Length: 208
Ligand code: C5P
Image 1 (cartoon, rainbow, N blue to C red):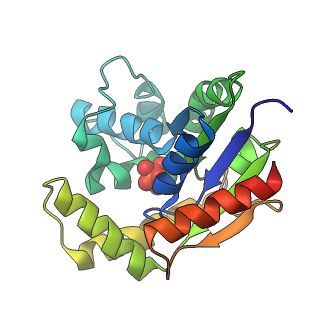
Image 2 (cartoon, rainbow, N blue to C red):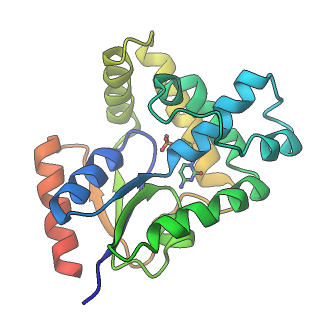
């Protein structure tokens, strides 16, 4: 059979990024963190002083020429929060679709993680995981991650941000965060990273 496409979706700080990276390594596939695309749009807006409540400004910010994808600012809570605001606009999502579909269509297969990979970007993916965890546990993880990056963060603020982001991502009309019908659920709340990765590999292997 041909090289697989693996879709990994889930809410902020669920562990989907870690799981996606580990799957890519295990199966020898290239990996795209699609959240970085929305974060890049947000960072452009923040740098240009553009209004995140303007769809017109957000569409103009869909330009990656000035973005360094290793920039730690892409991973800040500020950028993530603005990303979840600009990602509600259908025109922004459309501007980013082709890049994601091209990545998914590589002859060697691919792993993509995001919110709408299994539902919109790659509905025919060979394996789909919906990775989740409780908001409190996700806030703990994101807080540790931000602190580790040297970014200032308070747990309570991170939890509030996570809940707001969940609401925006799940409540929007365009490509809301939702488990695809044919996706396997992986709740990582009570799991170590190693256990979550082992379980993810087993779930994907069963689908290939
Ligand atoms: O996953 P991450 O937290 O980096 O994503 C940032 C924001 O980008 C999310 O809150 C979500 O609103 C948006 N996003 C999206 N669709 C994707 C990936 C991310 O709407 N496939």
